Image 1 (tube, rainbow, N blue to C red):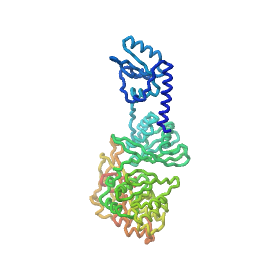
Image 2: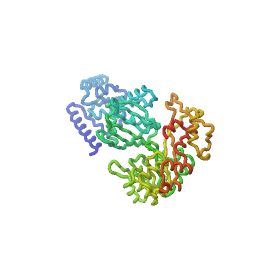
Image 3: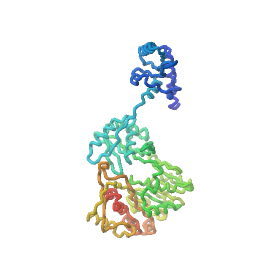
Image 4: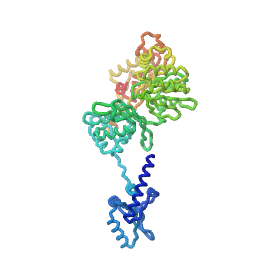
Length: 540
């Protein structure tokens, strides 16, 4: 029996008990189930306060041949019923009373006196040293109703454009922080009662235990309304026991297929052409590298969306699935419960896919299986943890050894970071002598073609400016991308033709072939006024 059937059975039992009670009280019984949600309300006959106080609800207003009719419950004072009979009779009016169940009374009262929607103040990010804003947000989280506090926190994080919510146990309090544009900001502190409510909701929705003594991973989804439109948030949950309690991090992924588009990544024509040429090829391995939170998944999904046509079979292996994309077969791999990317990849290759995306290459087995798949007629996309494209080669060689097959399979490695974009309040200034020296050293030996529009003799930089409406001087983030297209010179390192294989030598060779490094791309963005040199230094 499902929940609806159980509720219906309970209501039936209550109505039968009310019917029996009506005979004892000498009142006609009224079963309102067929019309209680639809019958027009009789307004102005009794005030709402009396309806609550005396458990009485008007049903029909008199006039002409009609009677005044009221619905009462077993809790309605009999003296009130008798007094109303006398009053209406003395005025020459007819009045009737009907006994209804308590459930029926509650339904009518929700219509006569619907709960008022409470609007809580929006969460604001505090500037440095702004303890009052943190205290104000803490008070707001303390008064949000118990059943709404978890949803309120997620809705507010989405409204702020936060990528993560951190719930952290300190010695005397629980701290909540949000990562906005890559920077963690303290938002509020809450007491342990509120913490237990948040963790209880997290436990039931993401299927994680609040009493576990080891790290856990979970996943949940939530519909969020913003600016009148509704979108789906995918939320990845990580919990870990600490000295003072269980900490949690919620990573928010805004599910909107229209945003998974290479055109929205701000790529130059040359970068886009290189990606298009590689992913249009029917086979090969493409690796996205960078730390957690650098946007690797978004770029990979954007590539998949570009490849997502009716003539291609695309399969992904993910832990967990962060975005659901129409037309693509997505397979969750639970590595915490014995699942393996390598085993999953071997299985899906039997389905004859054209394109396979492996969420992450974490071990030698997965790496070798991905390489084997990429030389047998499949385009394989994956992510890999490394600081740069050159470092990715060194790490892969450490993982699987010198591998000639790898040299013929790998076609493109993309390293990326996300830097904060300057807002309109930015201020231009001449570069200092130290800054000019540093910038010229970074671009030493770079061809003039790569520096179109850049004057290294007269360098202008930009600073962020804080305003009353903009506490940080930045708004949103942009992609900084380093692309290494694998050439014969690079393949020589992978095959073992070069005895001394190291990151610096690989990077030097790639730069000689025209690659711009992450540092160079970041500085170019700073010279264009899109970000600051300080931000590039922080991230890259």
